[in-house]
Image (cartoon, rainbow, N blue to C red; front, side, top):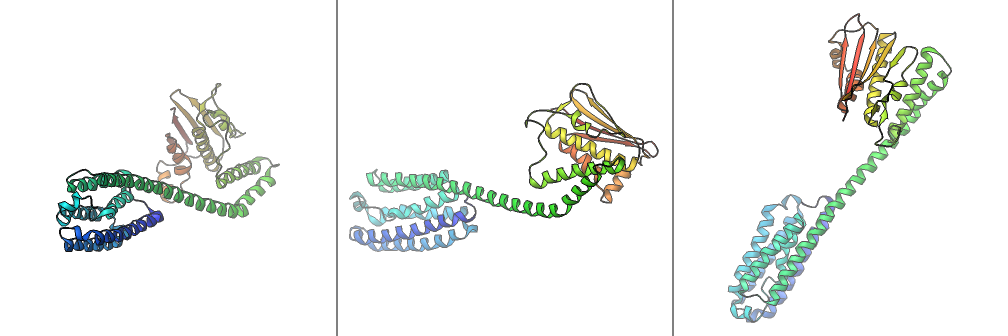
Length: 372
């Protein structure tokens, strides 16, 4: 997995610097031992090839779009080819004398590139390929060749591990930046809402708290919406009714909707549900009661049934009702109260919504949630 974002740039630049520095060391070694080579001019030509390939990889790896398999395989193949022709250029006598091969430390470049591009396993793979080729060209296992193989393997594993750590650090930093941006946006929205909507809701709640009838009900609803909106913009969520895993008695959540015009019938024993499910089911029932109050204009009845495998809340009113296709027409016109506040809530918690209505016969809404 490649290192994303800005952390990859220093790693690839470090590889380019390593290649240049190791090439300079190759030039010093060749200049010192050229008189012992079988073909000194061929050795100089190989050094020139190394210099050209160093420039090619420096340019290629600098562009993220080119750091794919074609360049990685070509990089490994060039170094393997140089190792294979080394015995013919140096001669058996020079190798038997223990002289270092022409590539010396320069052959570690592909190992580092593979490790940065793919992690520990890829770096170790490139190291094993080059180590096997280097030992094979010598015709014997020497301490110099064995030490070089071990160093390459360690370099591939360590650099690959560092690359994977850079991946993790980059991802965590990105998440932190996104979280900070979201927090700032929420704070900005909270300030704007506090200066407008929350103040209006609080004013309505204070002015109508001592009134009776519809004005008092409006004040109560305004107070509830103020609390809910404050929780939403603060990111705190609904106030917990107990421990996170402690079931909530749905009867208590539905009981707040009972009034002179809303009758609630519930079992005598508790109806426990997980807190998120209970809150969403009660909120959907409240939305159905709001619709009944606006369009029904009369009494409403709420029936809570615990069927063991499922919990059903039925809301019935004595209003004028509506045609079967009325909900589809309302959704097409952009009025999504039923679709989002009722059906959407039930769908999110795995429940179902059934609405029965006809002109002149009132409306009944059945909200069913299976127990899990």
